[in-house]
Image (cartoon, rainbow, N blue to C red):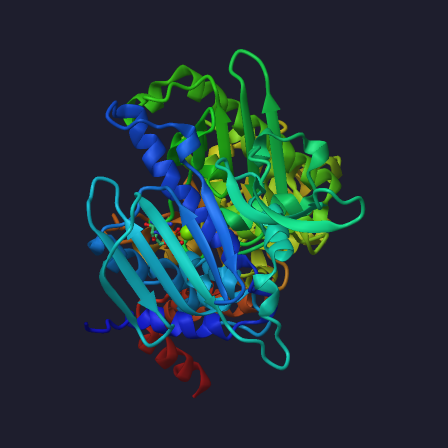
Length: 626
Ligand code: ADP
Ligand code: MG
């Protein structure tokens, strides 16, 4: 018999697990029972569509037995079992690439919840066992197999015998060490309490042989022990329980048991809805972003049960994309068991539930924003981007649902604020909600375009996420107030004296500006006197719907269309550089040409755009220095 090696990644993970901190060890039981329950689910589900399978509830259960003498715990189930190939495939590789990827991207830090991170199920056996034996017979097969492993060394598979379909997992418990007590896992009360703690809601009976005590027959004060097989779990699924009976810990244990995430959820929502469509649901808002959340590998969805029977692992129709981070389970007795995936989408009941859930999530988030600001900001940091995508998606169809959940960094408050907070604070003479777009808060703070607005004491929202401006363009208004970029050529600040002065100024310098425009030709659409610059000589602003930031983003995408924003070169006529420019215009055409190009390139650089000929630019500067 040959010993097979675990796949390389499994080996490393196994190593990590076996040596992980002891407080995690007890979760092995939760993992094995959950697998057993899954295996029974599979055969149960099959029986619903196959008349040949006689699903008699009595015959399906999980049994946990302890053998102190041989130091073993056995977890038996009457589930679907595994054939040889399945044994090899399912127990030979630990985690799918997902968790490995995660580990690569997030160098594991000290004190991290390693086990929780992986949820590697079956392999948690090795937390307490030095040898694991699996004896299994698959449904529909006459052969049984034995899988055995002592850990990182590898595993063996050989033919075996087993009377009934199902799986026995036998753990040989490690011996105590100086600082760790493994014997406790051979104690029936300990095991019983672990089942209660982690697996109480499992829908199949979990049986144990428990030691009871009774009066010895014929005596009045002598007692004797006897063994009785008892069901240890209550079998009521957590989502069917009364909220008042459940603790925070119950909810987070369930989250972990289900492997919904590597974190502790920020919030749970427990729904028991009675009405046209009745359903129970437990929904979670995770604290951290799953490592693959913003990739196409991420699959949103909720577990879907019909009257206690799982019909779908990830029902994506239950969640809009923008709430795709929500995890959890929905169980409804009003759903037909036989619905297929395609029909599901058109199922009236399901659509009703989905709408209900959407509204509930929205209102819970709003509540969190009002009452638990710190938690909300944590949430927003992880998932705000997906909300903004939601505003933009589908031509803004859902923008009303989401607008009150948005937050942006404020120039005034120096922290995240909501649009409502912004609008409530707006100055009386302020017409627009102003925003500035840039790579980082630091970069935006240095933008010359913000000078005038900040001077007037207006608040500016900083957009540092590339989706921000697209989302806001889709939103168009918030509470009747339109949005305006600080880079737009007209900031909409009314000041007649000032306007007139600028107009006069534009007239006065018309021929100079025309000459500049000639030199720069189609790189810009016009040259104008700036109304917003104070300390800087030039900046770019834009006219039309496409902003310079959007141009940058669109052109950075594959197969871009080479779109161009309409750029205006704004000149600060109060700056001393303007005097030199004017002088050159009147007396030295070459110099004027040089200055115009330099100013234009400066404006590009400030805007974070690249200049087309950096060598020429530096040569030009050298010319000036000579
Ligand atoms: P997961 O449960 O997340 O798939 P596990 O490591 O817990 O990961 O289990 C790996 C696979 O092994 C399961 O998906 C299942 O196919 C198989 N398996 C484990 N335990 C059992 C069992 N008791 N009966 C049948 N199959 C099992
Ligand atoms: Mg599992």
